[in-house]
Length: 278
Image 1 (cartoon, rainbow, N blue to C red):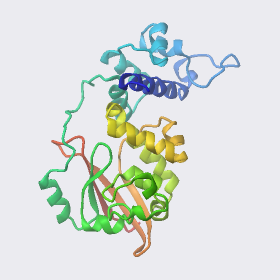
Image 2 (spheres, rainbow, N blue to C red):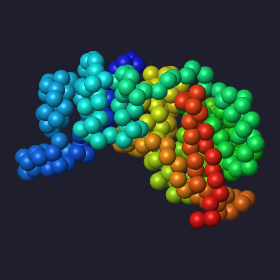
Image 3 (cartoon, helix red, strand yellow):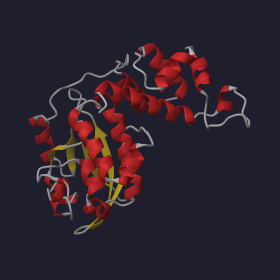
Image 4 (tube, rainbow, N blue to C red):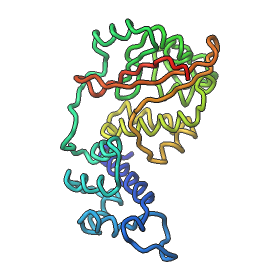
């Protein structure tokens, strides 16, 4: 079994290879032609652009036990043109603090004041922790997310056989293991792909946390779709946008999702769905 450090090194190597494969050589003045056997830039080209030795960069992509400095990570992020979410994920995998890093917190429970505010909102709203377990939600959210926040997803065939508990309200387990989610969420495959990319951005610096590691392994073993999407190594920030549902009681519903991070609790995500007329 891989150690936490080995897991981080392997994920960092996979992420860098995935980014390198997406690069266009001509955009950096490198020749293209039949001699290129794989898409993207070569390792030596990335090393050249970042001002580092080919050997050192190769070791990183080989998941060797080497330490990458914040300065080197910043240069890699610049060359790859990473988004803010991808940059944060890169630094998290390397176990280094970004100069613009964020303060960590240790308690994933939603503060009482935040839970009270959610209950006062006349729109569906909920709070997720770092493992994407729902920590607080209001009645509107519970009505919308049938099979998740109402605790009803144990009714799915086979769920009990895998040991789910009635208080398990993990968003990813719901989306990938519950039949109710596929029926409720319009464009399920597209939303599932985005959720995995958003979760990867969140989980990058916490891959050695046992609950998160267990969650990833479980989903990869039980959902072929999750395993495929996780293997794509896509990273996205949780930006919100339009969300549509086919609700069994309320029919077609359209919302604009708004996601915010409490200023003093960066590991939590406050999600609200504003009604949209389309």
